[in-house]
Length: 289
Image (cartoon, rainbow, N blue to C red; front, side, top):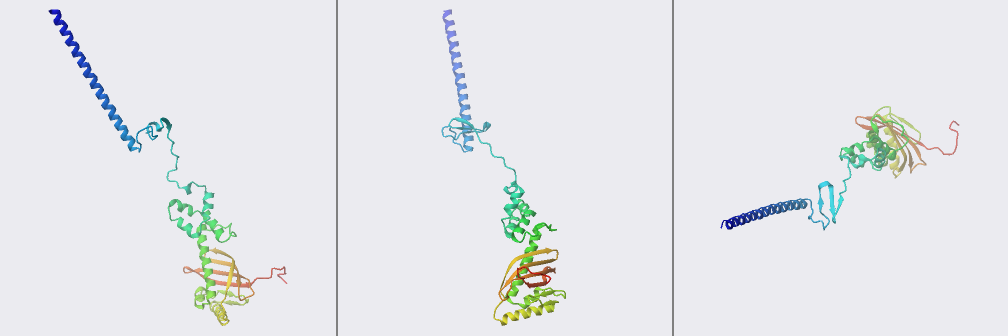
């Protein structure tokens, strides 16, 4: 009887131990399964935020750790982004010679507009070498060795202004407008005009009388004064500028050498000297004969 009770007690103890072991195993498995499911969910959420579907089979699974990418089950390094200079534009990365050459293809208006885009373009468009190249392209290379006191940009603007004034002078001649011509000349006693006839007129009143005679002659003849200008060259020196050119006039045997001198007064340019002379025969001759 005592042995039978001892056997029952030992069996009960074994069953209790087995039940405890099973309960502990299930608890551990449940906790592990929950942790695994939670980790998988977090990984899926991360993949979705990166724009990936989360499967290696489709070739879009990206593991951010170490910068590696799984494509078709293979681990490959993600290409490193190309280094870029922070805040540097393409124009700033060019060598100065290339920048100057590129800007030389722009005209005056385009170069001025470029300087108003941003600070980088302003520095490039205000480059003295670019304006020197533009000056030589639009005007002449005869003044290659000069150094303008205010830079080539200011010198270009001054030259362009005097060229426009010179064009206005010949438009007045085409129109035959004496009031416009009287406003165009400086009212001073030292102004001079030498027409193609070789006659010299000195002083404002005498010069205006000479232009009046010329315009009346053109109107009486029933024809205007037509001409073409060639090889126009300008030089600006402070408040004085002069323009040399060749004029081919329809009503004269021409062509002529012409020199116009301008003086800057009261915020504008005035003509102070005009000289027109018939071009000599290109055949050799003795200047002192």
